[in-house]
Amino acid sequence: MTAVVGADEVRSAPRAGAPSSYTVTDLGVVPPLGGLYVKGAMGSVTKRPRAGVVLPRVVYRVADVDTTGVAAHLADYQGVVGEPVSDVLPAGFLHVLTFPLATAVMVRPDFPLGLLGMVHLRNTARVFRPVGVGDRLEIRAWAEHARAHRRGVQVDLVAEAFAGGVPVYRGVSTYLAKGFSVRDGASTPSEWAGPDRAASEGALPGREVPDGAMPDRAADGAGRPASRAPWVPPLPTARWRLPRSIGPEYGAVSGDRNPIHMSALGAKAFGFPRAIAHGMYTAARALAEVGPARRGDAYEWTAEFFKPVLLPGSVDVAIRYASDAGAGAAPAVGPEGGFVYDAWRAGRTTRHLTGTVTPL
Image (cartoon, rainbow, N blue to C red; front, side):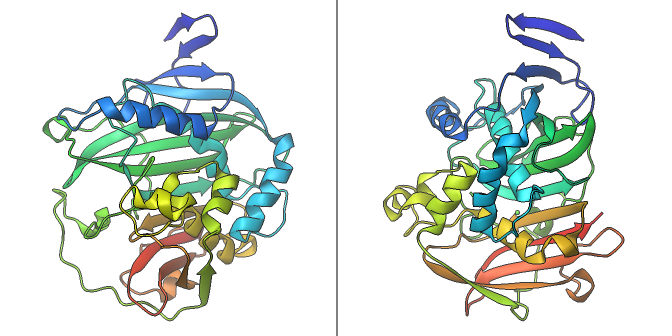
């Protein structure tokens, strides 16, 4: 189906990835994240918890994103998260490039969930082949699979990148909106059945996971909490000492200048005692510590988030082979089995995040 919706906008049936019932809206450029956050904050005022959540069946697409000019941005990102200097874009940087388009979907007037207060539960990203500086990308993003959660509704925000018509990246960010509900447990279409391994970081969007929140794989089929043994930290392989400045530094390279990460004053306005690290920063740093040589050219990277990291703060980290991680670890796929990582408050058992890096 194709429909002209304006002088500079054409909608058509998507060619891949998105549910077939969705239509495509072409945008000229990827919108800046800062302006989207302002729009989302203002729009959240009218988006109150309610039943019968229905997502907009639309895909946003930017047909030609030239990465020739991202070299300096990439170098800054690599320096902040600890990636080695390279012209290859790691999954975390591809998330930075593509996620603003997904955010644009979330700030649409017909997107039913308010951006303010949404909890970032998990992230799953797949790199299908290396993406280098100079590649020209087509980027698409949409929202799908609104489903019940014991605290409200969770939804997937999907971003894909293509080079020469071939998929090179897919990222799925799952959010929780408290107080909402889907109609009779229904969900919107999803045509991707990737591993659901992860759960919570984030406020604009994605408030950090509150006390007592648990990842979905710790819940039964009805979304009720399932019993689990207390988590015991593994033997650490590293300790991160994170300064106050890491929030603004990652905010500068990611575009996510959420007040909860920028300063203690901004964080206190949202109920945190101090500024907190970006969850995606901690996940990207773990990905960097696994390193390009061990993850390979094509890989899957997952992250689930627990308690936020207060800044300044120290974080113990364990990166180990998935085969050595024990029964509690997420199942690994791929020919090499991959790696599992965990991060927790140094000297304590307060868990911050866990995830996997698996060659494909």
